[in-house]
Length: 304
Image (tube, rainbow, N blue to C red):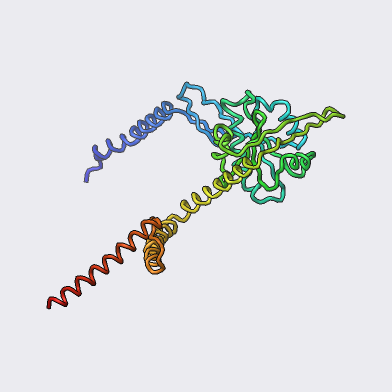
């Protein structure tokens, strides 16, 4: 055997260090070209910025806290209404701390307050949205003067009139619509404000007398609004039951009309939609027809 080394094996062994060097140079070149990512934490969480981007980071968005209804005492509300009763609408929620419905309504009322006091209405004193508790200072007298007997009670004071929100729809959308455009459709009553004659500080709100027929009309209107909301809620929550109830009533009504005609015939009273004169003419004609039938039957019998 020859002691000389194999030339192909020697060449391949010489190429291995050279290939490793080329691969190392390629990796270093890719690392130097690739963008360097810097991670940082801010108050909104972990963010990632690239050194290859020359644009500045986007501005941080500050979190906007919703505006809640202003908590007032009875004296503060009366003074605010007295100072701007003719120009500034006051949307007010009268509530009691023990009232569960008042607590359920609070988030929607605060949402309405945020909508009515921000945006286009911000800084213009277009609306004052307030909440007055029964236990606050001066509230007992104010609640008595306004004849508030149930909670929650939502009203709007504007241009010398107090408009009472009626119905069971106490959503934020309903309060916004009531304050912006629909308040004129609700029962209203005029009022006057006056300063205390002795101190000149405390403001009293006095409701004007309401005629009897206007009072009854407002009560009927409130009853219709409550019934409307009940019907709407029943249709939305139990639509299948409402459809079944409708067709059941339709069938019962048709049967009742049929029975009415049968009872009228048996008891000798006018049919549905028939006057007494028409009833008399019809009965006379029926008697005459029966008599003619009997005469014709007798003639046939004699002819045979």
